[in-house]
Image 1 (cartoon, rainbow, N blue to C red):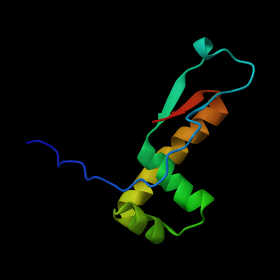
Image 2 (image 1 turned 120 degrees about the horizontal axis):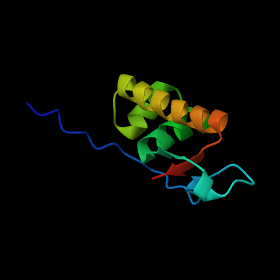
Image 3 (image 1 turned 135 degrees about the horizontal axis):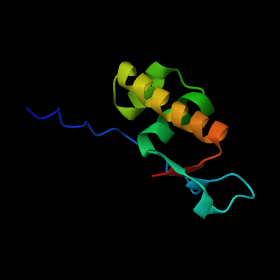
Image 4 (image 1 turned 60 degrees about the horizontal axis):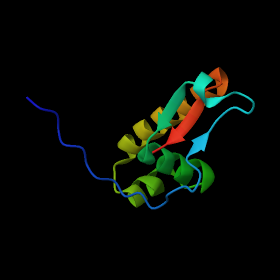
Length: 91
């Protein structure tokens, strides 16, 4: 039995800067954490734009519970990168 097909979610923002790294550490020495476009958009809408999870879920055309999982995954990745000194790539 195969998993349910992944639903397409609306992403309205494409960042100009897609790479962040600790200053003074060459890229070849860094592990890279990848933040996917859905995680970036969910964090942008709720943390930067200040929308409620319900409002953000509506904008992304997904359920609030799915949005919560996306936010949790994205914030965990960002926190890990900051604490452990890893680069972050948005794709």
